[in-house]
Image (cartoon, rainbow, N blue to C red):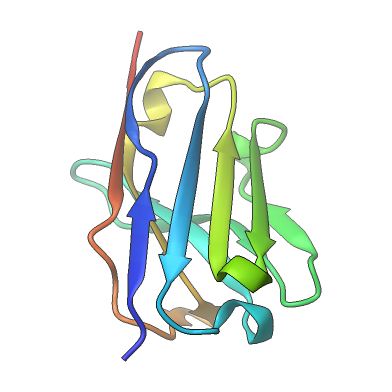
Length: 117
C-alpha cells in the first residue's frame, strides 16, 4: 500500500517562505499527476497546485505567483515551495494523486502550516 508522508510545515510570519516535501513509499510519482491540497479550519480540503506526469503545472488563483510545485521522480518526492505567505494560507497541507474529482491514494497525516500576521 502506498504511503504519503508530508513534512516541512511550521509557523512562519506573513511574507515568509516554507518548502514542503511529500515522500511516497513507492515509485508512484513518475506515472501520476500529483497535487498539493490544503484544508483550513472549518473548510473543505482543496487542491491548490498540481503537476502532470509530463511536468505541466497548474495553480489556483490565490497561490499563483507565490507557490511552486515540483517533483523529483528519482527520489519519489513531491515539493511545494511557498513564498510570500499570507495568513489565509494557514492550513494542513497534504499531497496525493488527483484523478478527476477523486484521489488515488489514502491520505497521509499532512503537515500544518501557520502564517502569523
